[in-house]
Image (cartoon, rainbow, N blue to C red; front, side):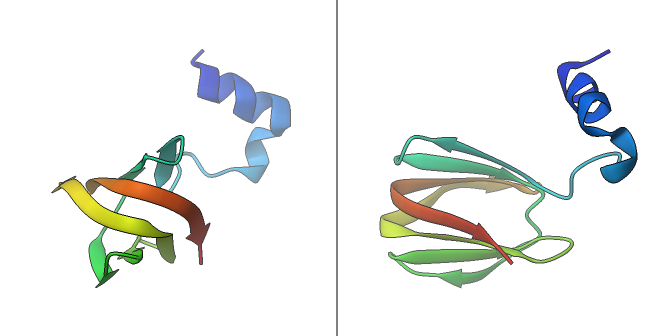
Length: 86
């Protein structure tokens, strides 16, 4: 059993979908890696908003830029101040 499956079982697997709609990994305040991105909705040096299959993710900060975007995976670098999901 994988680690994520163990965590789901401990928390009650019936309450969670089989696979998440997206995944976010933050690397301190320097970068964020997103999986499950459908498109870029807004792009500026202070805010990057992306569409997911359900909802959006907004990264706010300073001097933000997309380092890589390919097949639903995105790396955003800069001074990350917040990450929110709508």
